[in-house]
Image (cartoon, rainbow, N blue to C red):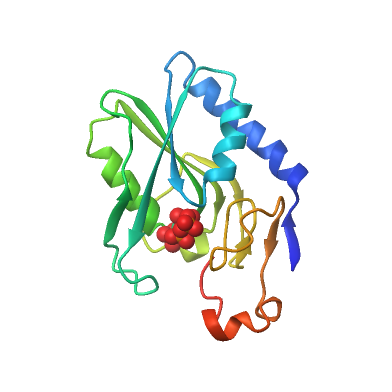
Length: 184
Ligand code: PRP
């Protein structure tokens, strides 16, 4: 495993994003909407680095048949908050093909928010399959499989403080169970 982004570098960038959002949405009491599960670490750090009043909520989606990427998503967990009239910022760990973020944006966007912005810690534009450009991007990353800081491989590694590159050799026996690393 090789570190792509260390915890200190991530913290600095997250603080910059938080300042930018705080300045853009000052006095708007924005609603940050985290997309579970990957966003949980980023959301906690981003929220705590903001210096304006805001609220948080979470939702979860799941694609039908990952890898085939039909673009069809199921809402696994809905928001608690009513987003109508709110200034909403969707918070995601990574935008890869963009299919998840587009699905979430469409779901939230259909509920009449006053404004809707996308904030991703990592952007991997080389993998994009839909036209989508988040307003806030922490880091643009190459097409490597990353884990840590909320990102998983088969539900592992989410707790790592750094964002690290996972390579086939790191998996050992696991690779037989989980197949090759094909995304993120
Ligand atoms: C990951 C990640 C994004 C999505 C990005 O979520 O958290 O939501 O994939 O990929 P895309 O741009 O190609 O759609 P995953 O479905 O693995 O669930 P998780 O958040 O629970 O890890």
